[in-house]
Image 1 (cartoon, protein in one colour):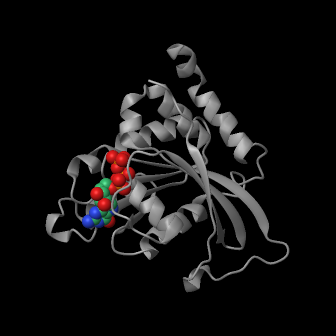
Image 2 (cartoon, helix red, strand yellow):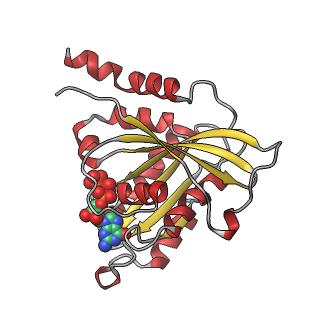
Length: 231
Ligand SMILES: Nc1nc2c(ncn2[C@@H]2O[C@H](COP(=O)(O)OP(=O)(O)OP(=O)(O)O)[C@@H](O)[C@H]2O)c(=O)[nH]1
C-alpha cells in the first residue's frame, strides 16, 4: 500500500470568548507548537479538531489525515498550533515506530475518549505512560497533555462518569475537559486553549523548521523507513 504524507491546511481564527479577547500587543511573542490528537477509534478526534478549527460539526469525517495550522492567542502569546489528527484506521495499519515518531514530533497532546465507550477510556493510562516515557525522559518538565471526554450530549449512554475522568487526569497530572463536539464550539475551544496554556515558553521557542517545509521534512522522516521498506 502506498504511503501518503498528511495534507496541511491553514485556518484563520477570531476568538469570541471573553477570556480570549486579549489581542496581542506590539511586543507579543509569536510562537509555534505541534499538537498530536490521539485516542481510540470513533471517539470524535476529528469532530473535536474540526469543531475547534471551523466551529462546525459536520457529522462524518472520513479517513483523511491532516496537519492543520491555526493561530491562537493565549496569555498574550500568539501561538501557531500545528494539529495532527491521525485516523485510527491509519494508526492500525502502521507499526508502533510510526506512533513513536509522531510523539517525538509533538510538543503537546490531546487524548480523547468517548464517555459512552469504557474501552476508549481504559487505554489512556498506557498511552500517557508511553508519551511521558518518550517525551519526559530524565527531564522533570511536565509534558502538556489534556484528557478529553467527548460525546457529553449522549448522557443516556454514558458509561464513564465525569469524576472518573477528572480523577484520572489528576492522577496523571493532565488537564481535563468533558465536551460535546456535536453540541458546542466552546468546549473544543477550551480544550485547545487549555492545552496551549500548559505549554511552557521553553517549548514554544521559535523553532526553525516547524513551518510547512519543516513539517513535510518531519513527515518524510516519519515515513521514510516505511517507504523504503515498501519499495
Ligand atoms: N453524539 C455525538 N456524536 C459525535 C460526537 N463527536 C463525534 N461524534 C460522532 O462519532 C463518530 C466518530 O467521529 P470522528 O470524529 O470521526 O471520530 P474519530 O475518533 O476521528 O474516528 P477515527 O476515524 O476512527 O479515528 C461520527 O459519527 C461523529 O459524528 C459528539 O460529541 N456527540
